[in-house]
Amino acid sequence: VKEFCLGLKDVSDEFDLSLIGGDSIRTENKLCFSLTIFGEVATNKSLKRSGAKAEDLVFVSGNIGDAFLGLQLLQEKIICKNKAYHKYLVNRHLQPSPRIKLGIELVKQNCKSAIDVSDGFLADLKHICEAANLDAIINQDAIPLSNAAKFCLTENKNINLNQLFSGGDDYELIFSVNKKDQHKIDNLAKKIGVKLTRVGRLRKPKNEPKIYLLDQNGGEVKISQYGWQHY
Image 1: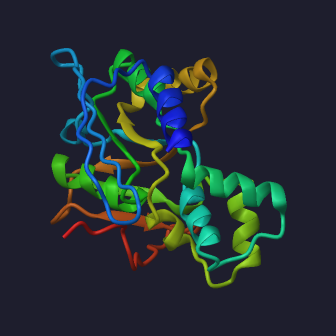
Image 2: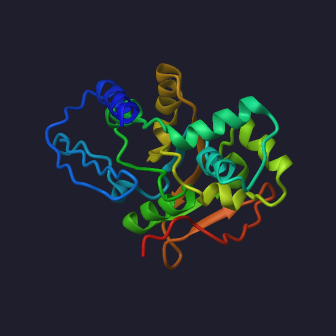
Image 3: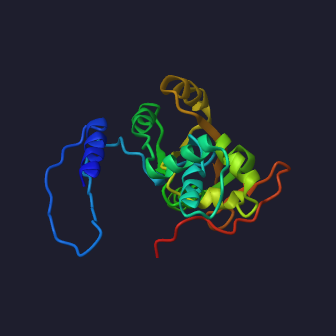
């Protein structure tokens, strides 16, 4: 309990949060904590899923799939003989770092649409597509992977890219910007020291909004799973 409270204080200090209430109950065995965070956003300054436009470029911060691999390691479903990579991946699952600063900076760059990767890269990008009624054309090879993830893929043949793209819990940001503003995003990446990778573009849908995942030859890759299903 003491370690949990110290960890909660560290996060609260980092993001300037105040603990303003609470309700204590008794449990038979394990402890269970439920936290709710309230905040404010200035009028017309929110990053909505529905704000994306046709011909916008799609970017993602950081790397995708690390948290999924960290969970697989904790569950002993895969191996990672590199100790540094093992520690890094587990930490990415247990202690993800939300891209708060990036989100604030994207508003300043006139970005209109964003979502965090909690359900999975493909699932959350699909949320944007459905909310904005757009198709997404994504280059599979452009989706950023860490060196640790690439190492794990070579060690564990039972893991594939679709699992990494749908695993979730990365808490990176997917966002879209007008193509004329790409230079602003490149400059922003240097300014805040966060890798921001262009992975594709949005377009008017042919029928229902859909994600088209393309291989290096431009062929469509079948998506077997998008991510976490809440219902």
